[in-house]
Length: 374
Image (cartoon, rainbow, N blue to C red; front, side, top):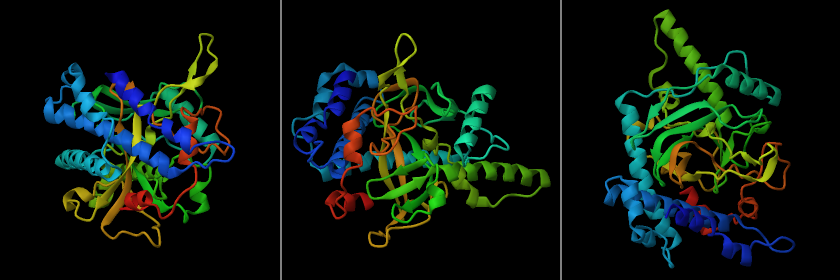
């Protein structure tokens, strides 16, 4: 049954490959990939719904009956807007639960202790950081997830010079579970300072054009941890609620790695990667989000779209959702780098057709782009 979930997700794009995604003359469309990604999230969250609402959170019980999956993978799935609505219902309930848990103990930083004198802003410095991470085994504190497993930021299992930390799940995670939030400053994609973009591989883009910079967030969190320790030594306090956005232990999406290249028996690179086990999904925190929880939102708006600026949105964010069962494994997210640009030597596309659609033409006034901003 697990293979059926994976195969169903993997084969969603076949009709687009046939009809719309052709090299030499046919145009790749972001809207097509957005529909596919929404369906991925729908399958995952419906699995979560069935597991926790009908089977007491027991994934093995869910797997015992093939009909449970038949209900989700239908020949005629719900329309796009209904899928979005059902996804939102499951996500909203999880976000509320996670934030209430964080609020109950006042928040906690799950980042590894800062590495002194090793800044973020060049490739040479990044490689030095990664080397020290591997040599010192610097790691964060394991965090309890409401669904019973632990999240742990520690040394990645990936073996290349640019792999430092990774996010590890200790225990079992059901598809559709929110694993992490992607923290950072948010920008309109057409209004980002050049110094933010330069050598920055911590930038995540939403389908609505919003870009989230996780690199600056890492750096600022490190600085504030040191600042808070300094204040404690002086017998004074740092600024109350201003620091709480850096104390959401689930704001670790920027530590999740791209799937590594699979090696052959001789240790040489193959043409394949491990499969990603989480997917990113747009999430908007609304102005009616509970005030006592809003301080823990790990995103800050820097620039907004000048036209599609929805005043009901408090913060634009990204969440990382499990779409495969994950048990005692590192978490991997397909970065989907633009296939028209050079790749780092450690990067390989898990699905080139997906990447071509993701970076294809953009219909700025499509119903899908408007819905995603809202």
